Structure formats: C-alpha cells, structure tokens
Length: 219
Image (tube, rainbow, N blue to C red; front, side, top):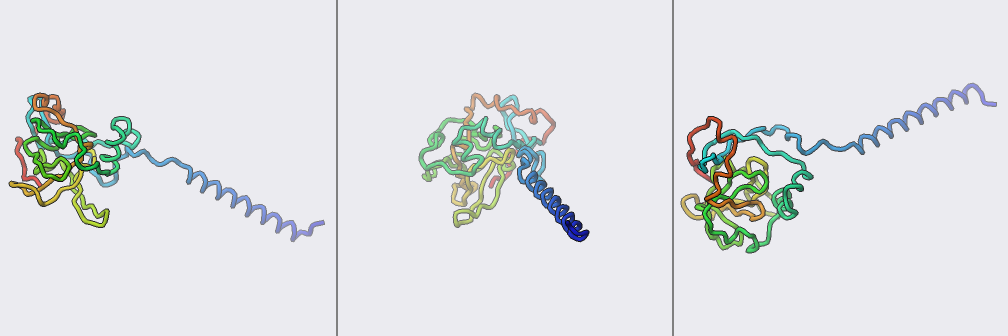
C-alpha cells in the first residue's frame, strides 16, 4: 500500500503533468493561428496620399488626396498576371530588351499596373539603351515613392507607385536634361493608355476641390 507521502507525491506529479500538457496546447494553438490579413493598413502608414490624377477632360490635376490601395497577395494574384505579380509585388526584374513597352512610341500615359495611378507621360520617355523603358520625370513627383535599396551588393534608389507600393524599378543620375534623372522601369509594372483615351483615367478624387495643376520639380 502507498504511504501518505507517496500519495501526495503522485498527486503533485499528476498536477504538474496536467499543467505541462495545457501549456503545450496553448503553444500549439498560437503556432497554428492564421496571421492577420495583409489588407490591414501597415502601422505608421498614411491612409491617403497626395497625387496627380486625370479629370474627366483628360487633364492632369492635383495634387489631390487619394486613398491608398492595399491588398493581400491573394487579392493581387487575382488581378495581375504571374509575371506582373512577380515584378510589381515581388520586386522582380524583367529581362532587358524584352519588355512590351520598351519600343512603344505612341503618345499617352503610362499608369501603374496595379492601381492605375498615372506615373509617366510619353513626353518624358527616352531611349536609354539599357533595355528597359526609361523616363526623365514622372507625371507628378508625389506619384512616385522612393526608398533606398541595398540588395545585390549595391546601393540604389528603388521607385514604387505611391498609391499601392507597386515596384517599378530604380532611378539613376545619368538621365538627360532637364532633370538628369533616368527612371528605369519594368514594362510589367506599367500599362499604357493612349492620348485619345486619357479621359478614361478620370479619378473620382479629381472632382474634389484641389490645388491648380502644376508640375513640381521631379526627381
């Protein structure tokens, strides 16, 4: 028969084992919990951005306040092709001299493939010989977001769509006058809208009271 001391020891061991199992279960639940949706607004990031957009007359107006576009990867995959997603959301790079917009010489505007924000006018496009569409200025400087990129063993300035953070490419200081800048952009990050169709880019934000359209000094 067990002594009183043996009974107490057995009860203590049983209680400790139960607590250990409960703690392990809590860890398991936490580890398997699904992360919050990527559509949640990132901490510290403004919900609106000030950008230049087109009105119903096909004219650039701004800057106006426009809501940021935030989607989860799964939502982006529904509206982008695999190659567009790889480059604009995954910060990839298309092969040089292969982009479908490299040799496009029509008049019009190049917009973000993700959210349709006007980014570059055809009048700012030039032949750089690098193998990617190149521009010396954006439609409006507020439409482009700049961040330092120190990947691949070098330091460059990444350019992104200011409204949806879509990766565009990089900007360099070897462009033509008057800016001296070369925005080196992936074709897959852009869509081209011909001059005759610019009114189709009319943004609701353009109908709100805004400052007169002026072109700021572009980077």
